[in-house]
Length: 100
Image 1 (cartoon, rainbow, N blue to C red):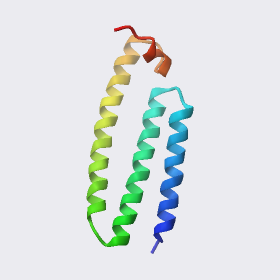
Image 2: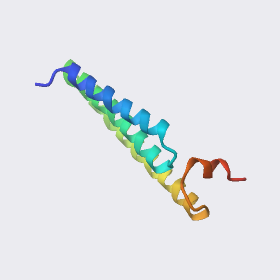
Image 3: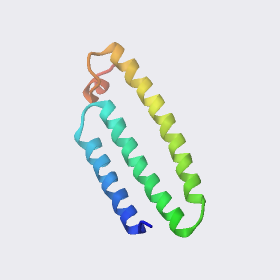
């Protein structure tokens, strides 16, 4: 059995990688992927605590987080697709230059 500390360490590393990817990149698609990595790190910690406490509530919460992440990815990729039809690239600077 894997100890809870190892799962939390993995979760912290995944969250740090996602945070660095979100802050360091200018491509919107890579920023969305980084947000997904951060959400998955939260799912790892929820599942670890749920297993450690022998309670299914953490796993159910992780399923809700997965559902919200799927909706966020669908809406985000739809916005990126609409942006790429109007502009050449999908960088953050292209979004800030749009005039509504």
